[in-house]
Image 1 (cartoon, rainbow, N blue to C red):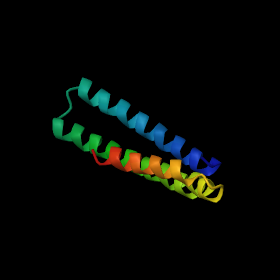
Image 2: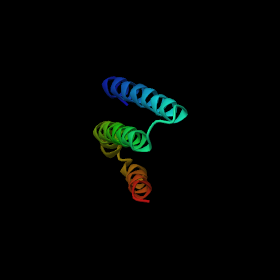
Image 3: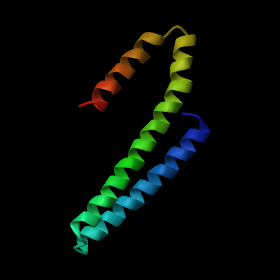
Image 4: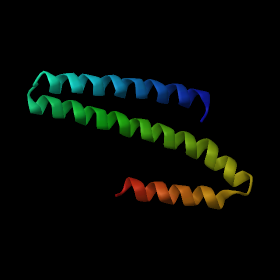
Length: 88
């Protein structure tokens, strides 16, 4: 993972961690269920953006490097596995 992507991903993770902690507090304080769910939806969107950022970096760097070095098959297998996991 390149430094720029890593920095962005770490920021997004910190945001998600903080958001989840906030949701925990909401539940502990018996916050209205719909309000809690709105926040969980926001966390899911944040995680989806984080995953997209990691995947983008992987495709632009790791996959390109594997193809140019003649080691494409294992990377393609990993991408197929990721696709399957994402669609369970």
